[in-house]
Image (tube, rainbow, N blue to C red):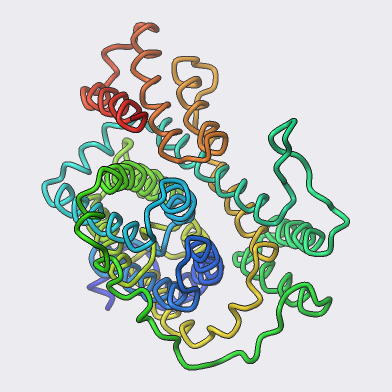
Length: 433
């Protein structure tokens, strides 16, 4: 084991890696409740999505740990699940089965371009500032979803959005959860988000604001409602223009979302050198493989988790950390009765605090350089304002070559960025029809 993971070489031990794996699991365990809730809004079976979430997290983390030897866990991505449910299914009108098919095809494409190192070349060509802006924008987007689901922020015909009724019981529960989770995180508790969610759920049960579970441990729910459902669609759906748009958009969103998240986590772990990821090909292959398997099981695209930094913070330095996390997701399969307490008001704090963590990457952007600041700002602010991760990325990537050219920095623009400029212009033109 020492030789396989390089424990001694990395200055770590089995005990330290095990503690790191447990820490990472507790920090991201909220996805077991949040992901079924979000995909449930798209009409999917909540219990089946719970199983698909746990299994895809287990498999994806195992691949990341064993193949890439990174202490980074993988699970259905926050932001990507929101894009799946609210943009592709509810916005574009595709069935959730068709959306799973789109995820599967886009993941296959990822595997192909990863095998030929095209994905790695593109990721390394993207300026670090835009990667950080994309990660921050996704954070703002999921935080907004958390505020909306908890009714802390509500729609308003005059001002578009407004503050909700803070005297309402469930809303007060959400506010309590946000404050409590914030306290835990500020205190430095590595699993503060998980503890905040758990205590908020307990308080909700005590005051009758959420349902009371029938038990704690139970047999693993059936996966049949979502297993291979990606292929339970008609040929007319497969060859429709909407499917083409969905695949193309998933390709864009997943490509840059996972790149940004993987870059952010690896950077905090100290793996990034000269704006490049070591063993990037293996890490990207692991990521793409997890997405393919997740689609077959019945969940939205998997991605590297920013919460993996909590495990890195306590000493995790090798893939053994990810392997331990994977095994804990397997154990979690037997706790499905607790899903009944996971409501939008209970999970709000997790979405908001995770959003804050992701938005922290804004500190790496040089705001004194307008040619960088403007496209970076548009990238992250457009995501919540247009309710689309894809739009934010596209707008920022269109602006970047323009601002760099007029500022006399043409030589600093990688040729690939010009290609992406054209692609994203066509992306908007295509979606407008």
